[in-house]
Image 1 (cartoon, helix red, strand yellow):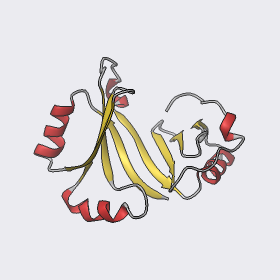
Image 2 (cartoon, one colour; image 1 turned 180 degrees about the vertical axis):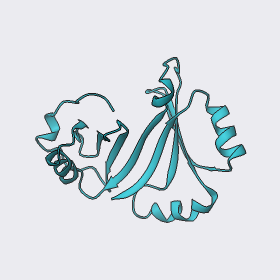
Image 3 (spheres, helix red, strand yellow; image 1 turned 120 degrees about the vertical axis):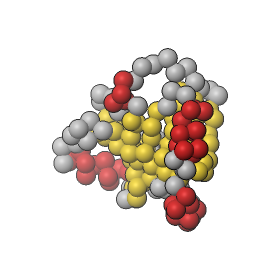
Image 4 (tube, helix red, strand yellow; image 1 turned 135 degrees about the vertical axis):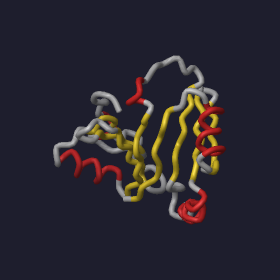
Length: 152
């Protein structure tokens, strides 16, 4: 397992970038604008982590990063606690990881139906995203037809 990023929801992307980049000194490493989903993701790294981020791209997903998520229709009030999004970890086998967690009593809130992504929650209700290393695995039961449980 490898730590990837922490996602934070932001109300105003420009103000957030001014704070995280302009004041804290983080640097933008990539950006994803999704017109259909109406959101923008901006990934940031600390200056001393830039070499690690570049080297990690060889392994798959870049890390360690902070992900700022800006929802364009930002009229939803998440409350203070929901502006923290989730921790993300890359795993060698998403199905084996979810099976191990489920056997240990962990609820799989968002099953890996796509062979690529799942969500679980910590005892303190922090969301944890699990991402398959490399390409998505072929769809597999019981995960492919398992419904979501709760929210993440």
